[in-house]
Each structure stands twice: as C-alpha cells, then as structure tokens.
Amino acid sequence: MSLKVAFSFADGKTLFFPVKENEILLDAALRNGIKLPLDCREGVCGTCQGRCESGRYSQEYVDEEALSAADLAQGKVLTCQTRVQSDATFYFDFASSLCSQADPTPLTGVVTAVRQVSPSTAILELDASGNQPLDFLPGQYARLQVPGTATSRAYSFANQPNGDNRLEFLIRLLPDGAMSNYIRERCRPGDQIALEAPLGAFYLRQADRPLVMVAGGTGLSAFLGMLDQLTERGCEQPIRLYYGVRHSTDLCALERIAGYGERLADFRFVPVVSGPDEHWDGRRGYVTEHFDLAALSETPFDLYVCGPPPMVESTRNWLSEKVSSAGQLYYEKFTDSSTSQAEPAHP
Picture 1: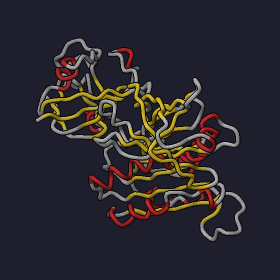
Picture 2: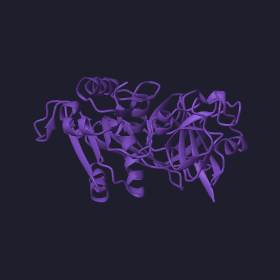
Picture 3: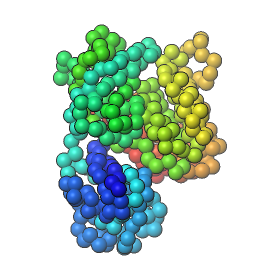
Picture 4: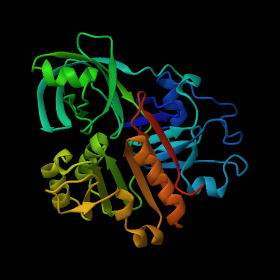
C-alpha cells in the first residue's frame, strides 16, 4: 500500500512523496530524489533527525546519544531508523535547499466565482484541475499573481486539499491594493490566475491535545482549511476558534463555522469585535481578553495564531504573562512576505 508523506522545512517549503507501508523513511526519500543530510545510517550520529508532526511510525535502533528519551517523547525521529505506518508529516529544522530543490509548483487557476462577503473581504474560488494534483497542508498558502501585472500576493488556502484542485481563498480588500482593485473592478469567472504553491510552515499538526485557534480578519482562511480536515477525519479533542475583527460587518463564513459545531465533538466559536459597533451585542475588545484562562492553565494545548502582526504579538505576550502550563505555539503573521513560526508557548 502506498502512503503519502510530507517533509516540511524551516524555510516554509514542503515536499510530498509516496512511501511504501513500513518502508524506511530515509530510503523512500532518497528513492524520490530527496537527499536529506545523513552520515552513519545506523541510528548513531543523529544527522538525519527530524520530528514527526502527524501520523504513525516505529523506530528501530536509536542511540541514546543521538536522541534522548525526552527527544523521543517529543516525536523526534532518525529517518534512517523510522518505518512509516500511515500518511505522515515530518518537520526538519533547516532549509529545504540543504537536501533538494523544493521550489513551489507553478500552476494556473481559472476563476469560477468571486463574491464580496463583507465590506473588507471577498472569497475567490479557482479551478486548478488543468494542472497536476496539488498537495498542501491545511494552513499553508499560495502566492497568486495579479492578472495583467507582475505583482503577487500570498493567501492562505481556505479549503483542505482535494483531488479536483478546487481552491478557495479569503481576500482582504484594501482601499487601494493591487489584488483588491482587481477583485473589485475586473475579476470575472473565466479569468486565469497564475499561482505557486504550497508555501509556509504554518499548518495543522496531529491533534493529540486541545486546540486553540486565533484568527485575525482574513487569517480565518487558514483555519477553515484546518477545520475542514478535522471535520472529515474526526477529532475528539476540544477545539476553540477565536475570531477577532474590527467591526461586526467584517465577520464572514459564519454559516460554515456553525456547521463545524454540528459535526465536531467539542467545538466552540468565539467571535470578538474590537471597534465601536452599535449593531453588535456580542463579545468586545481584544481576543486575549476572552481566553479561558482556567482551561489553558490546566492542561497542555496547541495554540495556532494567524493574522496581523500586532494580534500575533499580543497573543504571544499574553501567553507568556498569564499561562503557566506547557503548550505549543504555531503562528503566521500577515506581512508582505508571509512569515510562519512554531515555538513552545513557554520556552
């Protein structure tokens, strides 16, 4: 049986390749032209180590000087000793250029729909079925070229991978942005848009602990893809989605989010409006003011944050000041060039 493995690297690039069930991971990588750093191939030197972020595996001999018991408990592996037993994702804390060319795949998508769903947000749907199947991890992004220009912009996938290459993106509409002006003024079904993907080290890991998701504005896009996958595969862990916007009219995809609550075992949605809004009678202020401090202090958790840099920084600062339990923090800041990071919530 053929399994699918993803290698994600510190520079935000990802490689996908097939692996035979119970095959040694390093052997499969080399067979597919991915030349990881290696030396002894006997589980001693530690040169080929990475970390399993989702999936099942077993390891043969691992010398205690290569990986400690604590390392093993954190999912660290030696690829020369790892046998893969399911679809899986592995992270390597070095640039992809050290092992292989991992340039994102150039694609062409055809616009099938574009809808403005709030004063600040549009949904763009593309059909990329004319290309080879696109693999990506929920939470990653694509770089889209504005038609008629040499300008590109990065947008998170708002859907999980699918065999039809049907893609969806939430687009923030700026007063005078290159993509924003195209969406408002010229975008029509049938338009062709060049894109490259996948990109980014912000993606859904295996859900073994409670999940806290924090979206700022169109940062929601990444979480829609993650929640699609969690819903399809099933998840028994508690999931909390905090969605911060400036005005209540900026909220979008509410019906879709409500559907997650019907299909996931323990899902709670918390929208928060920060600006003055006479039509809003829900939670106000900043997202961090509405975190469940007691729950976060009781048990380890995985925290995903995607949105504007000030929101990401305020969330990180709040955690370091308020929460004492160990957690893993993954975040992506919306900047001119997208930035993905993962780190312990409390170093």
